[in-house]
Length: 142
Image 1: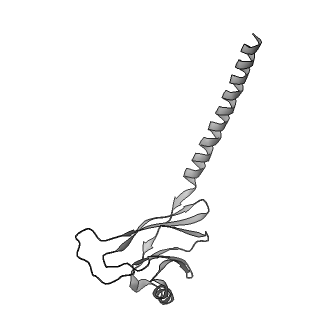
Image 2: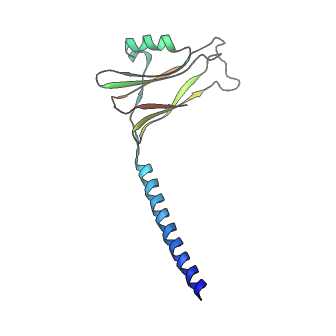
Image 3: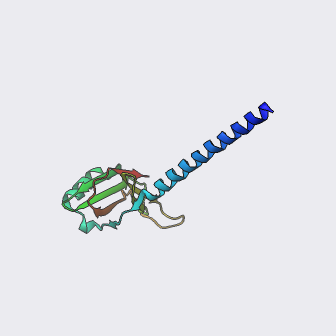
């Protein structure tokens, strides 16, 4: 009789603890879902890139580069994947978003399709993304 009562008591408290943990987990999951917001961006044509930024890009484009450059009201995010053996490469911008307190820039290097005719000279693809100026630190995802 005594052990039966102890088992029921322990089962009761285990259920309470599990219920509390599941509630906490749900709240954390909901908070994480709401903490992400997309940022509007524009991929900038070379003719519209500020001159000083073009100079920086030319200095660094042979190697992998991740740059931020700010003007009065805009911020430019530059992603380059360094020297590629041939032409036919481009950079796809997957997403620009604020996650928590960080601005996350997600890009992918897209290579030439099999059988595609490409220039056999090395290339140094990069992309310049323009957004409204922000204060969050920037994290580049590869």
